[in-house]
Length: 485
Ligand code: SF4
Image (cartoon, rainbow, N blue to C red):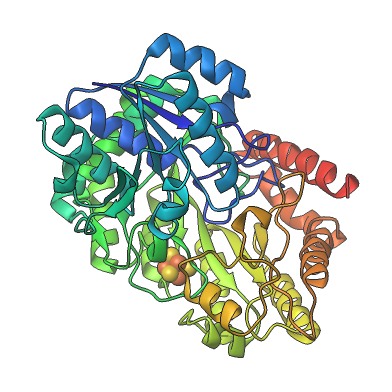
């Protein structure tokens, strides 16, 4: 079977597989990660797959249509995100008009929440909900074996005038994750690693983003993936399987300078991380890496990570106000953020701090408290997001029930240039004020003299040349963003 997997044209450099989709104010472009996992799994069961990333290649719809006509797929899989949903549905329609024999399949986080909407379009035949790489593989195998669609868990589809929703598929488990191909091998075969960039401090270019596990057991109300895509159950690949991928990248994918572990919760289990560190040393690996982590990670583990070439960690701090952290069930306090930032600095790890403005309870005063904490914690780089209530999240339901949503249409999440705008507005803090506060904090951080020593530290580090390039690219993108406002 021939399968075409498409990260479709939308706004330039728009990333669907980011937690907070945007066109990257700092120049970031993510891989189409989940689509790449699906590509690997389909090839594993004998499909001829073509993965097309129009965000990286700068393709328009005309180029896609030419390419897809040449390929003549049996299935065209279209990735979606909440802010690009209407666009993505219309892409499926255009493809369906061109290739009426191919079946169109929509995937992505919105599929678990808005399958009806997707299927109400004449362009969509099937929707794969939740962990779609596994569902897609089951679907292809069922079609190959001549089974009927009602036997495939996790899909929604049309049967005559009716829309049928089969029961959800069970989430994958750790053993399943060990069996799927390394996503870095898919990147090497289908994509150009030089196209992708993380604007984190000490993130080397080119890099690959991988997952060592899926699902997050924490209950942060704003966080979309555990509530719409990968679920709350945490499952992890075996340490030896992860080390095999690290080793493969180091030996067989030489242009890659860093691996970034994109998991929600790689550092959830100290014993697991320590085993990984030990295994990395025993195999004599050298490749630099970084990853997502959580406040609460202890000094000893961070030291062990640093010793095996961990360059940076990406941390969700979110807010400088305890009441807000409590209300979004973040499970951390301002005091814990402070002491974590201090400990992390002592280890020498570089920190990328993530903050959100506009969470429940936000006021002008709490924004000031967050800004003070940002300055105090002195991360090497920061991201400040405009609060975005994704359908399916507790935050979305809360905002809707309380009348704080300006619109229920997720296509309104971005402005015409593809940057986040707030669709939440409070009586004491408007959506415009939320967005202005984000821009003000970013300017205040990066354009202030107090960032100079941080930038100099980065430039005069062991990887100074790389840091200079990352800083330059990020600065150009950021200045372009603020000057066009
Ligand atoms: S800990 Fe991180 S990944 Fe997990 S729910 Fe909270 S924000 Fe999401």
